[in-house]
Image 1 (cartoon, helix red, strand yellow):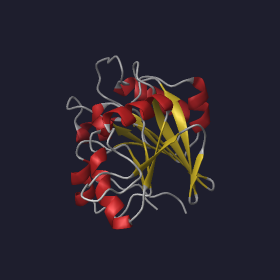
Image 2 (tube, rainbow, N blue to C red):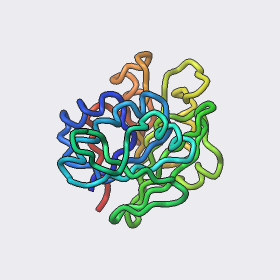
Image 3 (spheres, rainbow, N blue to C red):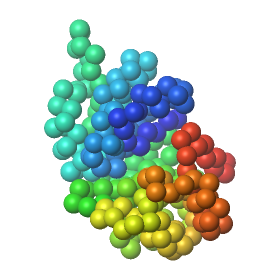
Image 4 (cartoon, helix red, strand yellow):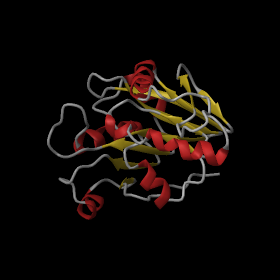
Length: 214
């Protein structure tokens, strides 16, 4: 099973580079351009899988997706090569095969934004790529997860993203078994940062594969 979170502008290049064989569902965190502008390339998976692919998002994000990609439908039209997507409102936990996906509301400027908690049996994986702060309810929901992926933009304060210090403080409260920092700008050097951050926290990189307990 292959669940995709967001479709950035370079989605096609990533799918080719890492040999993504199929897409069973797409989950959107929010509707900023760097998270949605590769959505059109989902159409290749419609062709390979011969099926409509579901895409889940919160109400505000779903409205933006329908507006930006107003040509998308669930029908295949002769002579047209367009994505076939079943847009679904994310109102509660969603079960895809053996995996349950739950939206995690976070603060990321004025745009409605969420991260996601993926659960399979007792194993829990939380993914929050764009975040300035978390409501207490979200933090409590992901406390003690097996793997936590969290925004950590830079050292200097930013209006809509966590600084490295803010991210590390949040990770300490979450207490994940393993944590990975993402969404870093060029102010942060990978090698030096990896050596300086606390044990159990790592710097993510392109092509990273994270294995979870069976």
